Image (cartoon, rainbow over all chains, first blue to last red; front, side):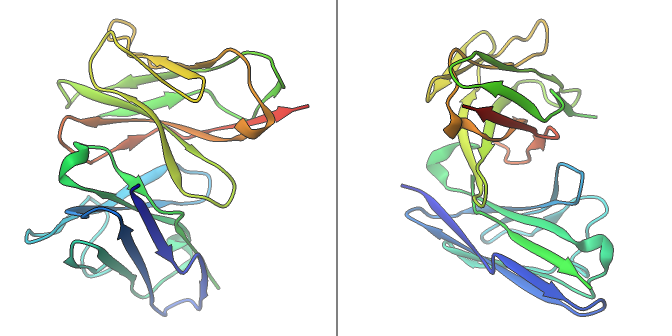
Length: 116
Length: 114
């Protein structure tokens, strides 16, 4: 079946530092990857959509300068939170899709980011 | 804009009792929204529970059911008899056909007690 692994599962970084999280698709080709964030007491917000061989599309309030994303092949994507501050804490989810699943996303368990 | 509103949790239900988690949506920019229920068990990621892409149809999985009602813009999740293992957070979501930009509800935490 389709599986998505995210790592690390939890991480703590000091305010002003950066943190990279990774997303691995197993059992299918992740032609598209969506990164979401769930901040405390909020629902999931879309950060950006990444499709292999296409430009990455960032949602309003999220920028490439703050959340650079790499999607070099059909099984891997990474996102970095640059210059993290308290408002960046939360659960970051990666959702991946293959061509055969229409618009169904398969999600990883997430990376929980705490900022000190 | 597009939005999803669902039952505010936590919801506590006794084992073997019935369950309904309400979900209503507003799809102002999506002509034919696809509707989903995802579930998140403790320590795990979001798992697709069921999805329905056509209005009027019902989706079902693991004893859960939801009917896509375009007239009432609803997609309520129901189960006739819950088990302790159903304890989790349930998310209602919508997306455009062929688009993986999901709009999620706030989530409903369900606790099933013995």
